[in-house]
Amino acid sequence: MVKFYQQYFAATQSVSVGWLARLKAEQRLEMLENLMQWESAFVEHQIADSKCD
Image (tube, rainbow, N blue to C red; front, side):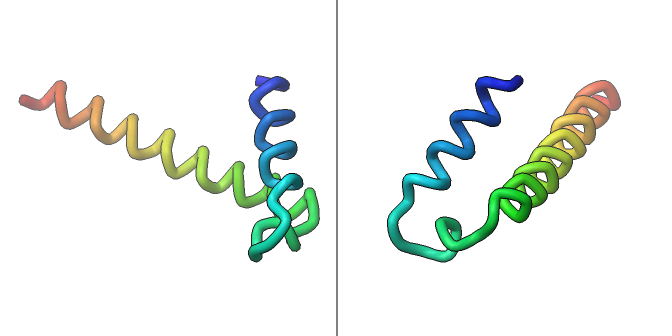
């Protein structure tokens, strides 16, 4: 998981233009955590739906 975060921050820091590059590391981490929670909830919902079928 550490490698994933390192790659995420390296990718977002290397962007030379755009709104993502202007965010502080703390803001990018918060955004990543929010996205990962949304993805996790979506996957759990899909699994629950497949069990009902």
